[in-house]
Image (cartoon, rainbow, N blue to C red; front, side, top):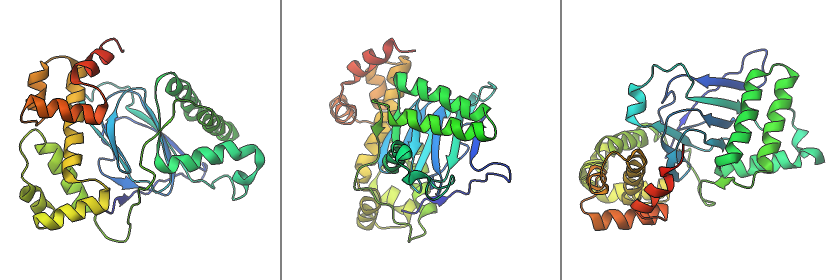
Amino acid sequence: MKPQLLKVTTGPTRSFSVRQDQSPNINNRWHFHPEVELIQFHKGSGTQFVGDNIMRFGQGDVVLVGANLPHYWRYDEQELADNQNPQPYATVIHFTKDFWGTHFLTLPETKPIKQVLDKAQRGLLLTGSTSELIGSKIEAVYHSAGAYRLMALMDCLLAISQANEAVLLSSLGFECNFADLENERINAIYDFTFKKFSQKIRLDEVASIAGLSSNSFCRYFKSRTGKTYSQFLTEIRVGHACRQLIDNRRSIQQICYESGFQNATCFFEKFKAVTGQSPLSYQRSHRNRP
């Protein structure tokens, strides 16, 4: 699988990039870049891909993505229709591991930062009170300038190194093969799946999108992602169901069929396998959250 290389610009007066995205899906494709990425989501929710990890993301989440680790955030469709609010969707920081000098991370004082950046090669998710703390420090980076911006970034990474709630995302054995030009193919599979997941998808149908036979497609998808297409499709469907359960506008039975599951038994089984909870327990656990 070959994600798209994204070029990040910094400018002549800045050694790393800080921006606020005003629109969802600004990089609506599976991509990678040599820069480390630190992102905080201010509003919206959707499906998050980091390496071989697929899960929901939402307002307040903070994610640190290591250099050249493929990633992709796809906002829910309703977010695309609600783009009138001037509040940014996310603040994004990009920096290379050695932008502050090749020997900086070898200093004993910067060992915690180096350890954080090493962990980021699998992706780090920060939520809850930890994400609030890191989020305030990301805001300080955005509003700082000159040497103060460098110090603010260092403070941010040191705070992440002390976080107890950081969750590693991609599996330890995940590898991405950059040798083959597969970007268009994998993004076509992703787009097709998001458009059709609520319907019954035949294997030969999605295989034709990739330009492969059914057997070749199964081998191709598993070798590139580390999971079967069936597992991938289930995670997309469960992610959609999670959003609907949190919104609490439909019955669990309605959500089951609208998410692409053929019967309630299959839905309950797959949902618990992915989330560790039953749909009702998941809904209750999120009912009182802001």
